[in-house]
Length: 116
Image 1 (spheres, rainbow, N blue to C red):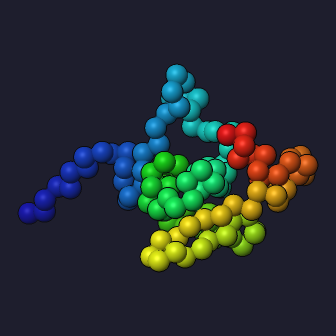
Image 2 (cartoon, rainbow, N blue to C red):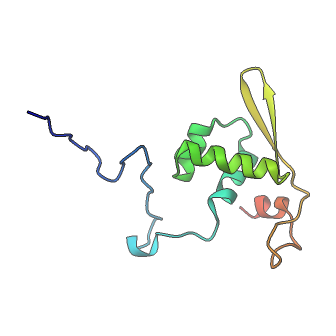
């Protein structure tokens, strides 16, 4: 006889963290945000350059693997520089680079980080 698998938190299946709804908003309106996960990761690392990826994933509300892909994207685009210090990674944001979309390309990464 097979044992039934008990799902303690049905919203957290396959290791995906549960996104918390934005405060003071009905849940139907909290499914999207104005900033992308890429910008969330970038802003967090600008504020806390020694943050471990697991903590970034928890704060952004995505998987650790998704954070790894985003960091690779940001590194490949030149927005982020990873420096190994002992066993830890330290991240440096290149704040002087322009944002990528034509509508916002007159602004820099530093402008975005400063705004938040």
